[in-house]
Length: 163
Image (cartoon, rainbow, N blue to C red; front, side, top):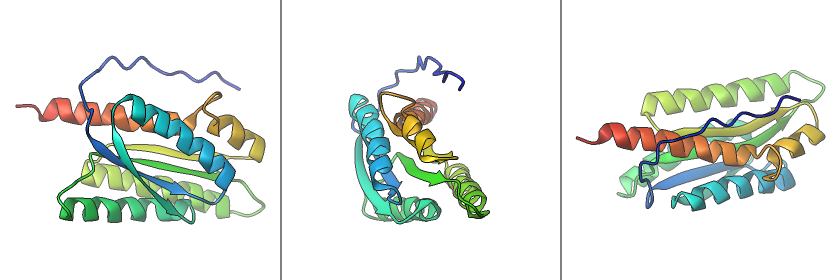
């Protein structure tokens, strides 16, 4: 397996006090707990607050983020970013490809159309062993990676929005 490369993110634009929504697919509870732990550690260290919403599976994540963004804006407490978490494990049918591709497409469409910083932590793997290697914060930490991506995109957005 290739060693993950985590590029140094030198932008330290202050985003403390901002809020994100974490939407997690609770299909594999124990793996999801590990992904969520990794994301929370990163958000806490950046001083970013978060709300957590749980959905049944990866296909529901983009819609739940859109619903949360609309509700938060309507309530006068908009989110500045989102983190998507979940796990899709290959099975015997093409359902894996459908869920993997469509959840990813939905997140990309949402991020671009709404200009919302979004970290995609929906892992797509061949087996449970690969899922655990990616989910654990002391291994590949894909939940943490998703949070770091959202944080960095929030910094870029905030920096560019300055007059």
